[in-house]
Image 1 (cartoon, helix red, strand yellow):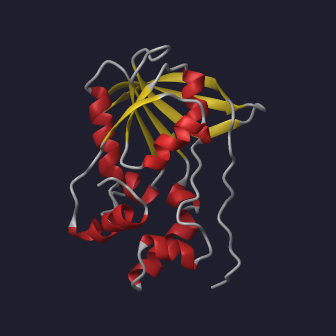
Image 2 (cartoon, one colour; image 1 turned 90 degrees about the horizontal axis):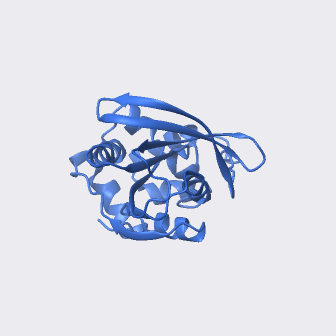
Image 3 (spheres, one colour; image 1 turned 180 degrees about the horizontal axis):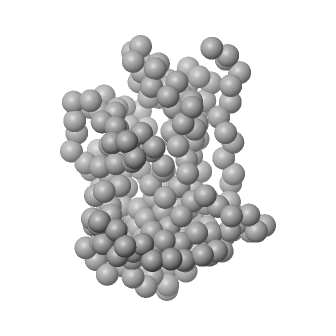
Amino acid sequence: MPNNLQARPLRVVRGAQVFARARLPSRHGEFEIVSFIDDVGRTLDDVAIVRGDVRGRAEVPTRIHSECLTGDVFGSFRCDCRDQLELALQRIAGGDAGIILYLRQEGRGIGIAQKIRAYHLQEQGLDTVEANLHMGFDDDLRDYSVAAAMLRALEVGSVVLHTNNMSKVAGLQQGGVSVARREPLIAEAREQNRRYLATKRDKSGHLL
């Protein structure tokens, strides 16, 4: 296995504008899906799932969700990503306004190919942090400037952030977004992801 493989670099986004909007009827309820361009006119892969009128609104329930192909699409039990996404969708569908920012930052920023390699290392005994470090990456390469730019483009007044990860709160605040408060988003643990959740709590500072 080559040791010089690198993760796909993340693009730090400082500014964004709404590019397109469309209705998104779903099994969870009626939403709008919004795409964006960055400050030099390039389309972003990241999207916002929006319920209701959020422009100028204070304390908008908001979830930042980083892409997890294995969990979100294939229903992997190795993590709690799909459980958190569905819980967030249910919460927001139950109110009159809310946002889910779906960021294309697979595997905490290392990409799907490296994530599968990390899975293999975990099967040999490493935890998620140790696997990333073993491959030469930081524990977490995600950048939340794009999330802040998207919220500014949506013109929200302030957000209530549904997260267990204080790095997301800090990332939004650094990007000029007012975070009124944090709400925990805790999914039920499974036997297959107990070590993963313990690592997030003990090594990554997640409030679980």
